[in-house]
Amino acid sequence: MELITPLAMHGANPKQQAEFRIASWRGVLRYWWRTLQEENNNETLLKKEETLFGGTMINKQKSPVAFVLEKKMVSAKKENVLPHKQGTAVPAIPSGCSVTITMQARNRHEQLVHTYDLYVQYMLHLAGMGQRARRGFGAMQWAEHQWESVAQFSHSLQQILQQLRVSDAFTFSHEGCVVKRKRDVKTSYPVLSAVWVGKGEKSPQSILVKFGKASHEANGRGDLGCVSQKKWASFPKKWASPLWCTVRKMGDLYYPIITEVKANDERYTNKNYERQRDEFLKIVGVKL
Image 1 (cartoon, one colour):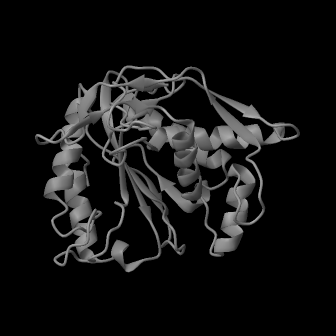
Image 2: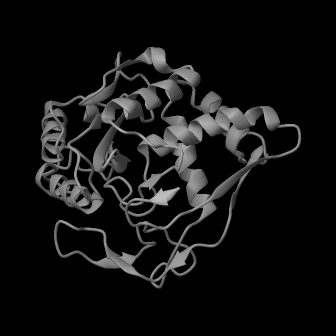
């Protein structure tokens, strides 16, 4: 995989250097696995999760699959993670660097490799990693993902969801909103709701600037995520943004990809949220 945007992932010395960590990779994969599960019973969900990823809450067990980093990746180079303004620079692994991860099945679990592979591919369509991952940083492109157009990207994502047997829950398009959930979300945790692809740009950096600008201008009430409790916010409680923004290369251009995750919660259905979300999408070049 090649880093399209800087990766601000940190290990033992977060102020001095960035470090690619398999534990963080696994955590992101676990999160995105959950976005495709529609399970109303939390204990059942946790049992499924621990079967695939290991855990100690239900039955103490290791994950049947291990991920191994080919070589250690560290960097002391500083990057501004707020590119729309003069923000604080943090250590990050520069864009253009390559990372290789090997997936290894433990004894008697070879049959699960295909399932893991599909979820990793799903994650590599939509996710970023590390600090400011929801705003475009830590975007990685798998060497096998050589899309020439938004239509090819959309078809590729649709194929993965079909192989994971969840595609019936969504409608698909080749531009704009390329994935849309058919029915209202019923789960108490965030699941995949929609995916938009915006206007292509010649450089990923210009997309990062747009993501930062949209976060600043379209989130005045905190409906798109709030990092601290503010009395003036629609919901004065800290919560993570439901919009995951990343970047992928298609043909000769780089495209903003915005994924919405939703739970069965009034924060996702109020008009302020929908208005600010749509304004955010317009700023990053999505045609609504």
